[in-house]
Image (tube, rainbow, N blue to C red; front, side, top):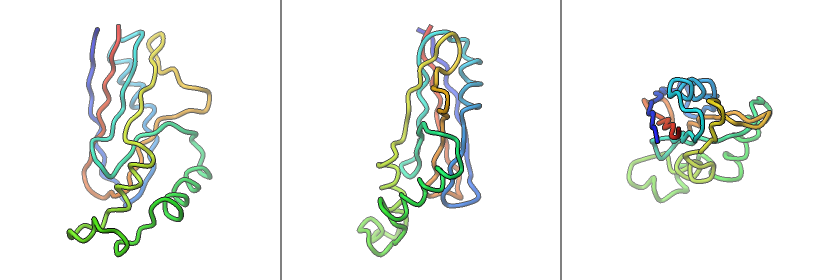
Length: 139
């Protein structure tokens, strides 16, 4: 089995952002020269996510609204984690909800995604340097 590893670095302008990283992941699959296998894409921070969904601005709005109003409102006073001097407990809960990694099949040297699927980095506590690991495994 062959392995190829690459890191993407992010420093977002806003505290919360959704970034389409599909093209960067696909480029690393091509660079790996792996024809059949998998690619793991994983956020290396506990206040960020990687997920697969549709690239549609209305959906992004809905996801951010759902996280803020249903899952984990950004209200530092309501979380015990923030008693330590942090203010990002909501970001940790959002990461738990969305997940921090995905595995995508690689078929004939390309990402094997459905017609509307894209790979996204979700930043829930940004404005500082963070990274994602892309690990392509296969033959």
